[in-house]
Image (cartoon, rainbow, N blue to C red; front, side, top):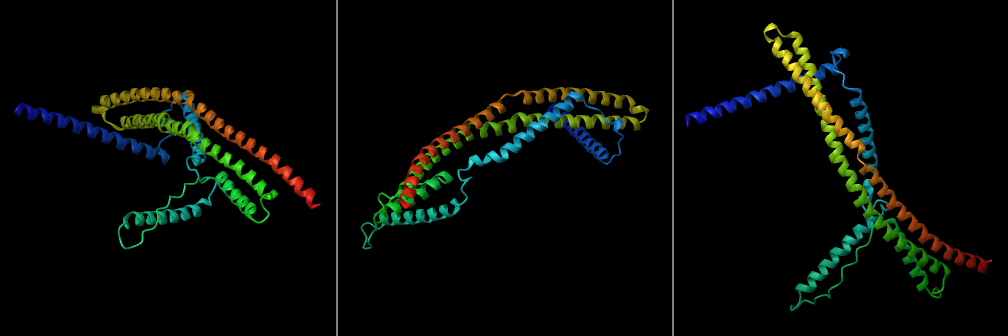
Length: 306
């Protein structure tokens, strides 16, 4: 038991020593960084990193910025209402209707067999897509129904034109939903994955290089001030720090190259364009078909009027 206690004490002492050494290194690195920022360290006393490493840093920064810039905008495809802000009022109305339906059905189920008349159950209103194409389709369809239901309006040209317009936008609305789903699956998800994995790992490797470089330069500064008894130990600390920086720089270079050579972002971009192209092509086809028929109605109406 006594031997076990001694072993535990030895491990505790070792861990404490490692923690203290890590804390000291961290403090010295922060101090070194502060001195550099304040211009208290001459430029020629700051270890120069390889040009290849610096060039890769610049390229990865540019790639990362491009990822963030495009993601900031394309995130809109993750929300169906991005082109139809008026949906807020519709959502409030639908919520009120939904609550009213719920109360009615609750009463219908719970007032049976009582002296209080029970209302008839009602079907919940069908959910509506909150996109501009769907809203245009609903508005035009409602207008067409109103015009055609009015006296003598069954063959009204405007009513027929609105019906054609509604049908085309209903088709476009369906394709819009398909486009958004494809973009979410084939672009947004993998694009964010690249940011949160490959690029993030490379950035962490670069941070490790920065810390290692600060530790090296801090060790060099310390070696200038130590007395003869600690010269050898200080020299070994500098050598170890140099080896550590070389290793971490090599790792960071490899990871940054992997990020830059990764073909996935370009594939994701291609998938984004394909989804958009499919949407606009089908939208143009639907509108072109409707426009041809509406133009005939317009010409006929103008001829009759003149």
